[in-house]
Length: 433
DNA sequence: TCTGGGGTCCTAGGACCC
DNA sequence: TCTGGGGTCCTAGGACCC
Image (cartoon, rainbow, N blue to C red):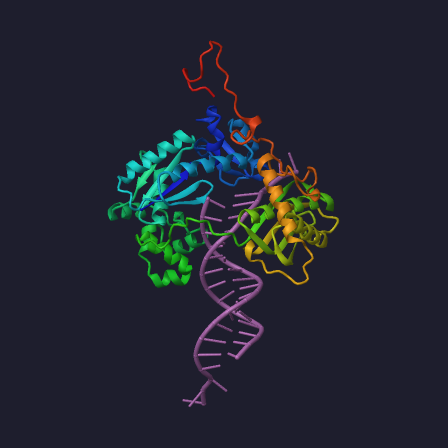
């Protein structure tokens, strides 16, 4: 049996942990650069605010309805996610962290009442971290996703739904839109609707060969999973990434090479850090740069350049050098640039790097410097020490006008508990924030 | 004025090898 | 009449996930 635990409206719930005054109010969180709506509270959904809606288009509406609006605070979300996962780990020997707000738990062999167990998990996460979660339990991962969906959508479930016996599964699938099934996206939903397949149950009645032919083996796997045959296993150790990308839109459009070079150097530095976290080196690097596609009346330009590195590396210094050279090769004066990014590819384990007879880089020295840089930055905060090319802060940086404090990760942002005038200690009275 | 940022897997087709 | 049989690697494109 698999349980899928999913945090409700995760980013919004994170913003509410230290702001209980936001409970019951519409709240939204914006994407990077305060661009689009990427998380909504139930109240915001009730108001009809859509996922992915550009914030500037509905700014007046948000104001009129007194919606609380936040910039993305990934430091906060990452830390709270970590705490949720730690708590979940106590309830299973096998935990798969699927995304920042979702995890699968293998409940096989736990001799318990699934629903009661799920309720306990839910209460514990709520008490320890303050994040509300929904839990679906079923014999396969895809069915656990279905159960989770029902736990959220159907009133009276109390955030928990167990699909164990065939009757309950059939009833659930007959009432489940095929397009909502995990792994069936917009295109496949359109294809399926065109042959009168509307529910997950309809999909289950299709011929295996047809599914295999039109939806590849992935489609067939989903079908088997819906039929209760587990094809997807727990992934306990996250596989090393095959490509790592760091890209951002600029806070303001950029025309000059130098600020863009600072941005690209910073993205290369992030890629290098990510490579070192997973103990990998990259053999190839790509830089891309483009203008704002939402302004078709302005001159458009988009280019990328891939360069093969002589020896695979994860050194910030080396990656910045190549990224910067690639940028200089593709940059043209006379355009207003909106976004740039660095992607590293051909990733392999750092202990198995193929050297070169003609390599002039002192790799041991680079590794030693990176080790010290990482240690210092881990202790004192990101970019406490960095490469000069990254610059000292420019207008290309993200726009984040409504950023909440880093309540759990920065000393200066920790909430202060002030005893009320009567001198009572907070423990004695109401919940004091 | 203003529109996110990451990833994965599969298939078909072409070029090449013996 | 009739034209083999087995591979690999690479790329582009399309689908999906959060």
